[in-house]
Image (cartoon, rainbow, N blue to C red; front, side):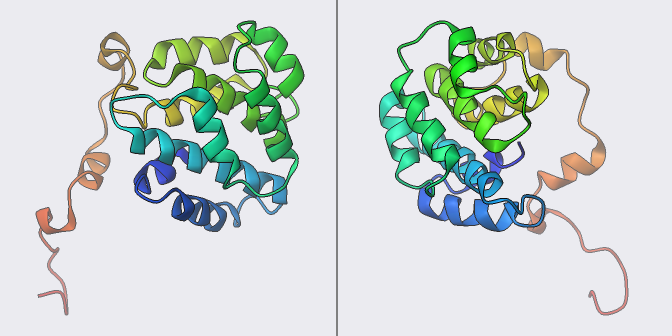
Length: 190
């Protein structure tokens, strides 16, 4: 659920996004399917970010993701997702792919990548399509939102952003580069 920004960071190297996803998932997702799910989400976000202002074609995006996902039930689900890109009925897709009700990667990730791939560049559409499926909505919408927001055109709508709380001061500091921050006084720091 938290790996999409990592993938976007490695937009210039989707294979590295996959490697970093494995490293980031190991402490909390010991199961190979959880790790495969993290790889799939990270690589998808990397490819979406790399595409820039022109959203990738859904089928090409899924093919590129599948090239980097390890053999797993997640991979099988992604192959099914690729075969369902022309389905418009989200309920049917969720019934086939899963939508997080079982709280496993193989029951969550294929559906989220299907939903994101069909709506890159349209955050609101991606969000509402995902939410309509039901299941583990906070997780599926977080994954889809992270992937779609990796695209320059994928930001949440302005009306949504205007209704969010301001970031705390510590988060603003995280947006600065280390060179922008003065060193705190202390022994050995100056």
